[in-house]
Image (tube, rainbow, N blue to C red; front, side):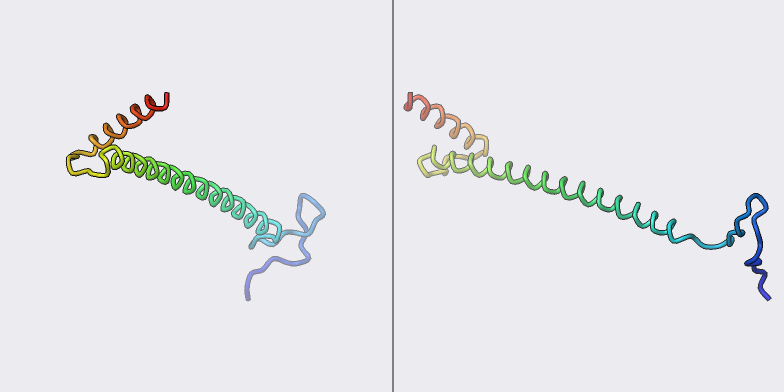
Length: 105
């Protein structure tokens, strides 16, 4: 026969019935589930914010790159045959912006 505690036993320090030596109470289990859910919610929110910020930064970088490429194309008169380095496109784009600013003034 199994050695199980007597259900009628009383704790020596109080007049309460003795607690079973195995298992968790429902309250303990619910608190553990609640803590895990809160931590998971925080992790998902942080991960989502980080990925959104990274996507925005990549989009800004791509938009700036495309803008400079279009300006380089326009500054060369629609012809990029003489441009051998990417930096030359940026120089031409900046020169075009300066000339346009002078014409507007």
